[in-house]
Length: 112
Image (cartoon, rainbow, N blue to C red; front, side, top):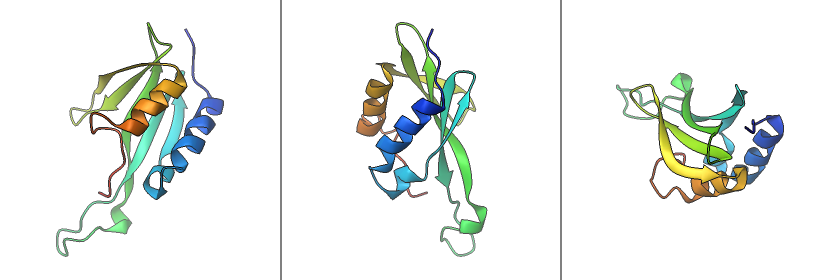
Protein backbone atom coordinates (compact mmCIF):
# COMPACT_ATOMS: atom_id res chain seq x y z
CA UNK A 1 0.00 0.00 0.00
CA UNK A 2 1.29 3.48 -0.83
CA UNK A 3 2.16 5.93 1.92
CA UNK A 4 2.18 9.70 1.85
CA UNK A 5 5.21 11.88 2.58
CA UNK A 6 6.39 15.47 2.88
CA UNK A 7 6.76 15.50 -0.92
CA UNK A 8 3.00 14.95 -1.22
CA UNK A 9 2.35 17.67 1.37
CA UNK A 10 4.28 20.14 -0.77
CA UNK A 11 2.21 19.19 -3.83
CA UNK A 12 -1.01 19.83 -1.88
CA UNK A 13 0.31 23.08 -0.39
CA UNK A 14 1.20 24.45 -3.82
CA UNK A 15 -2.14 23.45 -5.32
CA UNK A 16 -4.36 24.81 -2.55
CA UNK A 17 -2.42 28.03 -1.87
CA UNK A 18 -3.47 29.19 -5.35
CA UNK A 19 -7.13 29.02 -4.32
CA UNK A 20 -6.91 31.99 -1.96
CA UNK A 21 -5.77 33.23 1.43
CA UNK A 22 -7.98 30.94 3.52
CA UNK A 23 -6.63 27.88 1.71
CA UNK A 24 -3.09 29.18 2.13
CA UNK A 25 -3.52 29.08 5.93
CA UNK A 26 -3.97 25.31 5.99
CA UNK A 27 -1.35 23.29 7.84
CA UNK A 28 -0.37 19.74 6.98
CA UNK A 29 1.16 16.91 9.00
CA UNK A 30 2.33 13.51 7.82
CA UNK A 31 1.33 10.86 10.35
CA UNK A 32 1.55 7.09 9.87
CA UNK A 33 1.70 7.40 6.07
CA UNK A 34 -1.36 9.69 5.96
CA UNK A 35 -1.69 13.47 5.63
CA UNK A 36 -3.79 15.37 8.16
CA UNK A 37 -4.99 18.80 7.02
CA UNK A 38 -5.61 21.38 9.74
CA UNK A 39 -7.60 24.58 9.23
CA UNK A 40 -7.57 27.75 11.34
CA UNK A 41 -10.52 28.55 13.58
CA UNK A 42 -11.01 31.99 15.12
CA UNK A 43 -13.73 31.83 17.79
CA UNK A 44 -16.01 34.76 18.47
CA UNK A 45 -15.57 36.89 21.55
CA UNK A 46 -18.94 36.46 23.25
CA UNK A 47 -18.87 39.96 24.69
CA UNK A 48 -18.26 41.75 21.38
CA UNK A 49 -19.64 39.22 18.89
CA UNK A 50 -16.49 39.66 16.78
CA UNK A 51 -13.71 37.19 15.95
CA UNK A 52 -11.01 37.09 18.64
CA UNK A 53 -7.60 36.46 16.99
CA UNK A 54 -6.05 35.80 20.40
CA UNK A 55 -8.14 32.61 20.66
CA UNK A 56 -7.25 31.30 17.17
CA UNK A 57 -6.35 27.60 16.95
CA UNK A 58 -5.83 24.92 14.29
CA UNK A 59 -8.49 22.24 13.97
CA UNK A 60 -8.24 18.80 12.39
CA UNK A 61 -10.28 18.94 9.22
CA UNK A 62 -9.40 16.37 6.58
CA UNK A 63 -7.21 13.30 6.29
CA UNK A 64 -5.87 11.63 3.16
CA UNK A 65 -5.12 7.96 3.83
CA UNK A 66 -3.85 4.96 1.89
CA UNK A 67 -6.75 2.61 1.16
CA UNK A 68 -8.17 -0.01 -1.17
CA UNK A 69 -9.17 0.30 -3.98
CA UNK A 70 -7.22 3.57 -3.61
CA UNK A 71 -4.53 4.34 -3.78
CA UNK A 72 -5.91 7.00 -1.38
CA UNK A 73 -9.14 7.90 0.36
CA UNK A 74 -10.46 11.03 2.05
CA UNK A 75 -11.79 11.36 5.59
CA UNK A 76 -13.47 14.24 7.44
CA UNK A 77 -13.00 14.98 11.17
CA UNK A 78 -16.47 15.03 12.72
CA UNK A 79 -17.74 16.76 15.83
CA UNK A 80 -17.91 13.26 17.35
CA UNK A 81 -14.10 13.32 17.37
CA UNK A 82 -13.92 10.47 14.87
CA UNK A 83 -12.81 10.31 11.25
CA UNK A 84 -15.66 9.72 8.78
CA UNK A 85 -14.99 8.33 5.29
CA UNK A 86 -16.02 10.57 2.42
CA UNK A 87 -16.96 8.96 -0.92
CA UNK A 88 -13.70 9.87 -2.66
CA UNK A 89 -10.87 7.52 -3.59
CA UNK A 90 -8.13 7.83 -6.17
CA UNK A 91 -4.74 9.30 -6.83
CA UNK A 92 -3.48 12.25 -4.81
CA UNK A 93 -4.45 14.50 -7.74
CA UNK A 94 -8.00 13.11 -7.79
CA UNK A 95 -8.34 13.54 -4.02
CA UNK A 96 -7.06 17.14 -4.34
CA UNK A 97 -9.65 17.78 -7.07
CA UNK A 98 -12.43 16.42 -4.82
CA UNK A 99 -11.29 18.67 -1.97
CA UNK A 100 -11.15 21.72 -4.27
CA UNK A 101 -14.59 20.98 -5.78
CA UNK A 102 -16.08 20.53 -2.28
CA UNK A 103 -19.24 18.91 -3.65
CA UNK A 104 -20.36 17.90 -0.13
CA UNK A 105 -19.67 21.29 1.46
CA UNK A 106 -17.26 19.78 3.99
CA UNK A 107 -13.82 20.58 2.59
CA UNK A 108 -13.46 24.28 1.81
CA UNK A 109 -12.14 26.59 4.53
CA UNK A 110 -14.53 29.06 6.12
CA UNK A 111 -14.11 32.43 7.80
CA UNK A 112 -14.96 31.11 11.29
